[in-house]
Image (cartoon, rainbow, N blue to C red; front, side):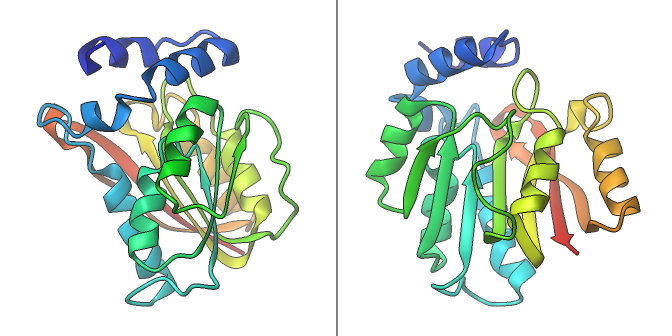
Length: 211
């Protein structure tokens, strides 16, 4: 099935089970389709490159612990590994996607997780959370950002993408503002950048520091 048929479907998912089924079905061809010129999915590389920037280093220290939330086939984890990351845990709703992520050998642990529910990780477990391609239509709502804040150590960071079209209407902007108003985070950036460049799609790239 072509990416032109998948994208309408993923933006109109009706339930957790529906979401899991569609992504399990898509897993084997996901990377190939998103790398086509008409998609040019640059978000994983762009977001991964922000991690050493926020850490103030040229590469990622091997002891930095990262949670890649909604890791899919492991695109973000692969880029993080190239930058030096050795302790990356991936979580995703789709077992099929996680099978593909496991093949990258970029992850320390991989677990099936519904990001619309509280995470199993303890408070202050990670230095960084990345979440790329998951905060979008019919997927995971803004409440997940609060869970990311909970599991990141004080002084740590969250690097996430939110599709531009739903930044305001989906409640993400308001949720981030509330977290900042409660002094739980510092908002370092919400810059709009290319997401699926070939399709002209853009996203907000959130860079948040946990207080």
